[in-house]
Image 1 (cartoon, rainbow over the protein chains, first blue to last red):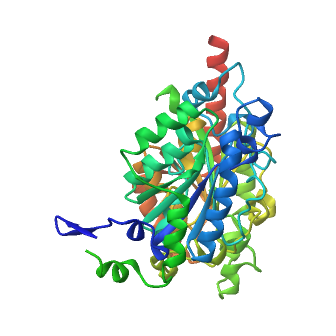
Image 2: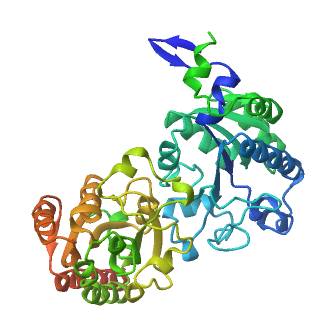
Length: 230
Length: 209
């Protein structure tokens, strides 16, 4: 813990990811982006890195549950007849003549990709833009559970992950990116995005984060846990 | 008015079983919910006129996430909080006479104000809505909170006075006085005409262009 202008500021990975004050955000790991027969898969996009990340995300989610870390699932969501799209957002989303009908509300493509699955008590937040903080209940849910730190994983790196990470820092959460648990369809964009994100948030491997969660005595609040380190 | 925000929306709040149904959560806490359910028939009429005129319809359904994940300490202690059930199907929670139709927008809210961390703004913006006609329960709680927030976000707020209600007449009257600070308070009949006039303006603009 550092003190800056009289304010306690988290410093180590243990402080940044303490289970009692941390939530794991799982961003957009949905069939349309991750499954071979989803939207990206059918479009022939490269799913190599996404396929490789899913088992690591699965392990991270399991570790979070064991340590009583709140798991929050984020779902990109399109409404029928573009009811959640503004003219400018339609321009952004439209590559051809019609905007892609991915993650349509209630569809199979919107659902979380197997074997991942939200549990009943885990909040699922639908969003209509890239950032999970734009016009959603995410901040309310985090506040209500006294969360101050986020571990972020999911897809796609340069899109919804990066937008959510950036906004999370503006909403005053500490952010740690689980770098081996984020992926996209283009390795060049992935690398470029990680370079930019490295200026905004902390990076850690899922292994490192899971080690903290396995070692932390859950229940001891971070201010107490943090008090002994300098 | 900006063409980007030229549309109108009917926003319904709290018109759900847990508030209006005699078997719902509010009634179970000993409150007589007759004043709340009594506005449903005229609200249904206004809803029909809004849909017929092509207005955006947005249903705000109060909800609580499983395990109380959406409850803060403050909200749990609030006198306004009703123990709404964590229903997964929001449409099932809406009172049957106001059941959403294809094209209606249905979203959850976890506090009184319809703009507190909800999808309301992105949806209203996406549908170019500048004017909100507000109906529902309760006048002194969700209706007043949503009107003040919406006004602060630069929406033109209209309250349909015969389509809002509180459990207690004094609270309702006091809240209507306060609503006149932030909103135009009009009979439902005039609100229906407002939707129809907007629809006619759109048709004329289409013919003119």
